[in-house]
Image (cartoon, helix red, strand yellow):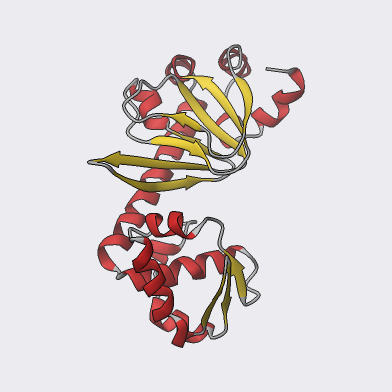
Length: 232
């Protein structure tokens, strides 16, 4: 780890309040690595050797079974994966790959576990991170269980629209196959869902989506803060 990188690492929420000695200890074997697009980082079932922190770019978490594959989550900056496996010294439950050029901080899992045992501030930050991840999973599960595919798509478009400035259009951050997988849909069902949303002012122009009737789309989507508000 270069000394020039230390302030950037220290600014990451997990490490902001930890003791200086603990911070120095976990960085002895830590390093930054830049990966190109579509590089496999970890494989489900493998031991959790490192904690990964996405500093730049984006990482896709995915899982496979019975010749099927699904996207579980997208990890933008600043995000960790896979923290629970690191703490339990257990196998990864998901695989990960970059979905664009990404700069990632890698810290040996054994150093994370050692720091957790002796640094109360770091332990509190870990608990906060795990709680946030758990609540995010619950919200995604609620959306899958309680909404139709069309409603899930409508609410995801509203989320992207809010994130991108609410100017009447948005750019899909992922390709449509990945978006379909995130929403628990087959690609052909995603296409049908977009067609269903046309009367509600949704126009598709490649990756650019125009929302010409926000009140109608919001009436259909029925956003729920306990599912859609990421600050709760």
